[in-house]
Image (cartoon, rainbow, N blue to C red):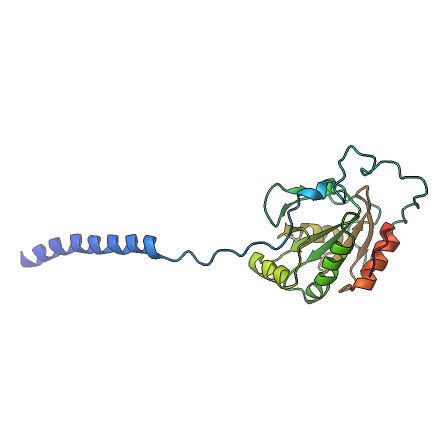
Length: 227
């Protein structure tokens, strides 16, 4: 009898204690530090031509070039080749922007543009990111420079972008979809795209510096950018 009474009194006491503990955990459990803000620019401008010209203007992609404009260079395959041949349209893929908002369809990207596939864990990618940032600054209004963060961890990518002062827009490709279309198992990859959205050149030669980037932009996109 005594044993039964003790058990009867003990059960409510345990329930009360358990309920208080759960309630306190809900109230005081830390939520962790807030995610650092993205250093990258929003992607909304990528579907308009560099410089923000409206799609209906004469400078829109596909419009006749002004008199005296040199013909665009012919397509060139990258050193290691890729699943997507030079001269082809960009793959029909959509990616989230690092800053959020609507997904970006690669086929709607308005060139000329340079896409750089990179990841925080890739040493050559980190070495060349500052050169791509300088390219974005020196070619502002004439060329889109777009990062495609590939198979990466978001906090680490944000940290690398902030450390190197990278502000050009970046898309998120966690599943390596674009990399598989271009140059599987290789990073970094740089893709040079003309005003019609066609791939003129893929480069998988390793970390690019300012001079090499300027040369590739001039050779494959017909733009003079100071190195």
